[in-house]
Image (tube, rainbow, N blue to C red):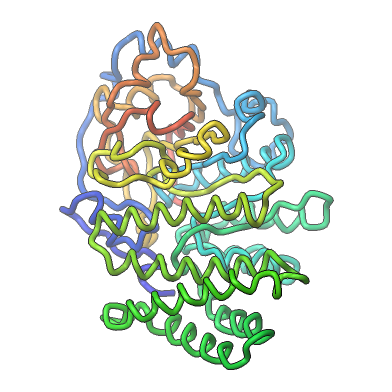
Length: 436
């Protein structure tokens, strides 16, 4: 796995945007810290409103016998096609556990049959197709980025496998433009096999060119030298799949569409890697939004989808976050078309320890006085959910206010809660994941 896929860098003293780019796009990274006094947690009316309206989540355990504490989600999500689950940092055990429980609930109780990860289109589709032949750990490792290679997330993949023998299997999908696992090494042969049905000569070229890219794209300045020709190659391959879909798709139309989309995604990936920072962020987030729309319209048109990604990707709005100016997030792109069919939940944390993308541990910095985390801590609940569409007055004005908040529980930023999310799931105290 190359260093961008693993997200190994932890730059300091950079802008938020530069940190995301340096991390290989798999999450935000530490840039600074601040001290705070939890007792100064905002206007007293805001705290009173929160204590009245926050809903306690009783457990993060996906095997919990009762789902009574999650039943409030039914009315909120009954008419939604897309539910996005964010996370302010990737290295948080409790975020993973909470998501697995929510996804299981959404599948069993609310009719959501697809889980779409912030990971590669090809790798996730391949892992789903091979689910019966893989262990849960191997299925996870062959699909998603290394930041989620942990026992907590493994529970989701075990559940996916268990559902494959039922009348309503949970389907794994990916929407990122990037390469997310070593199983991409199987992609050149997959391209060749599909193309060879109609054009054996072009199939050999595709096999050789994609293989060359997979082996070399992360080495030195290889992409800078070969990027433009590579982008043209993948755009041509994507068009070839589109032009010949009717001839190729008789046996397995979704596989042909996925292969075409994987080629299209590689062209966008090369564009973002060659572009200046703000432009690169917009290329990626728009492409990820386009990939989710592709899954919803071309691959799973009759299914409801859960999305797993970072808060910065799933949030609505443009340039809402301090340090992320000039970027329209994936959720902002999706909301232009799907807003009434979406519900987006931002995940935040208060105190404890978590892990950077290289798995090294760190302690969360103290919440900012009168900031969002301090306000949420004032409710006194270990795990809780706040619906931002709830009655705002009196006391709910905080939802419409620009508040200091933390990325990764560490980096100082600010945003308006109601402009970015439909709901917030808050974990009071967090711990690092149990990595493989």
